[in-house]
Image 1 (cartoon, rainbow, N blue to C red):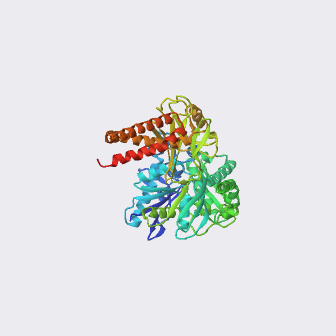
Image 2: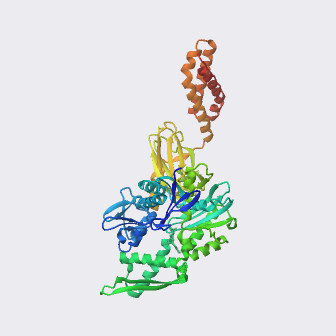
Image 3: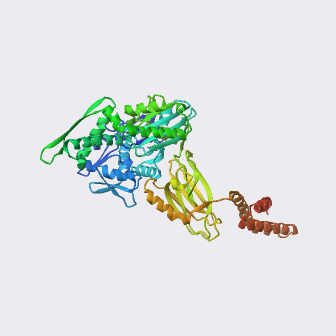
Length: 608
Ligand code: AMP
């Protein structure tokens, strides 16, 4: 049986695992480490470095070393996250040809997926070395809150690295899989995941029969360890400014050293109460003498600097429990994931909020990769009874006439799923409709988030409400959303894969909504008619198809001719009633249609 790698492609670190003889196991990298820094660098000689070796040279080659690429993957150039990264990253970020993001290293431009692919390729190589056999399949994890573009780009990265990504799963779900593996328990658990770049909280129900059902999930793709580092950097920069009137932010190299020192101090403070930050020769004062940075940071000060960040995580937990309609004491286990959960202040807040100590049995850096491996093994081995039921974090729907939000897929619906609804034109002779795909939980479309739009053109001219458009939403097992619209009469269709949610400014969204006003659809009031119509039309089409053959067989007898005449009149009546949208009349014809259909079928199938 083919082996499948489980890969936790983290913002800061990547962890690779596999199920070996039934046991999920982490694969160490070439240096023997169980996690690999998610860093890529290009040296002066044009050599590509990945992982620890890239991290080690980051200070002296800051401009050509990429870290935290996960924060950029699948994002639009105009998104606030990218804007922020452009001003703080030590490497160069530029706009790509499709409004996307590119990275420039030594004059060569790379897509973010290409950079992530380099990390994945490294993972593939050391995994193959370890296993002594080629591996091509992988399950990769992403934060539950990743939108479709981000998921798609992660899949692309896998493909570039020569991996067949057989499934994308959410990180908290993976953690639950690793936790529940082989335990045979029925429990409601919460997975609290604070990593380098993102925060996620998920509530799941795990059962001894192997079903893992996500009840609710939420998060913030812009809240993680780097924000904690940022607070320490700010504190150091401000202190230095007061002392020397020099702004360290002006110097990329100094900033990179500060970044490293801040993160190191933060991590140390998880174990000790205070630590020294020492950066000799951090910058020149301009008068030919170098300045040094030396400060003591206490755990209490760090907690104070980061208090609101921790509180933001807790607030999201509160909201998620509310969404799941659960009380805190109904959560039977709390699992901590991500390096940042080693910070005592984070652990204390989680313990206080849930009223219980988090589970100690899982390794926060490895649990997600292990869970991905468990899922990978289950996907290729049908004998493993395991069902994974993930959910959509928000309601999905479209904007209809009057700025109403018409929901197609409710929030926290189990995926994969697909839902259709029929809409109609909202004006006379409307020949085009614009489908505004939205995400959110308000009935007012303008309060929700616009994910994308597309136009279906070439509709026949007809009074309002008479052209029918079927809108279909589909979410696959990777969480990727596709939306299509079809003119039910002509069969003409348009579709999109939903694009990034955060790439548009509020004004841009408003303008898009305003521009769409004349092209919107309306929810169909007459749904009952629709059902009857579809059924009747099916009979009509089939009877028409059989007509010539039946006529040829029975036309020689009076009885036959009479039957043919009756059938004709039934068809005519039905077509007429459908055109006039007379639901009751169509219904009346239904029995006669069914009878005729049966009789025709009998004639056609009889040997002659
Ligand atoms: P992850 O994305 O799960 O690899 O988490 C990485 C984040 O965890 C980074 O921001 C690290 O600085 C942080 N981290 C790792 N170890 C510790 C520690 N002992 N104390 C506090 N933060 C840590």
